[in-house]
Image 1 (cartoon, rainbow, N blue to C red):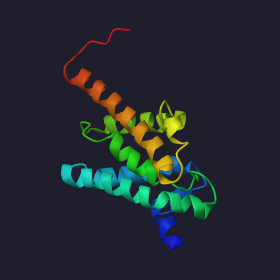
Image 2: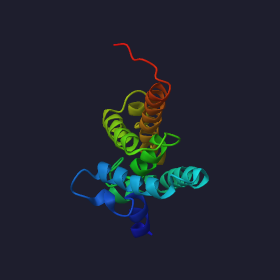
Image 3: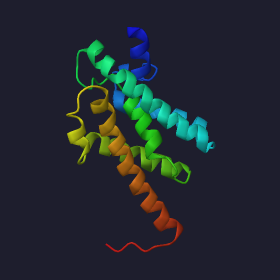
Length: 155
């Protein structure tokens, strides 16, 4: 069972990458994104499915790895990038910008994401990334609506 939990929570062992495991988990989520982006029902199901898997297994993975929110647990990043790009108009620009905004917000953990890390178990692992994803999605929705409707940006 430990191997299955590691396989699921490390998102096909991407979390075991020696080089930026969180980013690798997000890139794994992008693979899912490209597979489901044209089917809204499958896309929504994928987000929910990864979230539920994360909630079920991330707490157990913490016990296996003997660390709170261990770096190898990246199912939260995979789920987060999918949520970050949910209902955002598709083009390669939106995917690249969304990816970078999500990674920055996931690292910076703006309020209340940092506070969510205090939660114990799976919820602490999952919710900080969900909040970063929601912020990313809101930023992308505003930016693309401004571009679509030619709303001038005054700085």
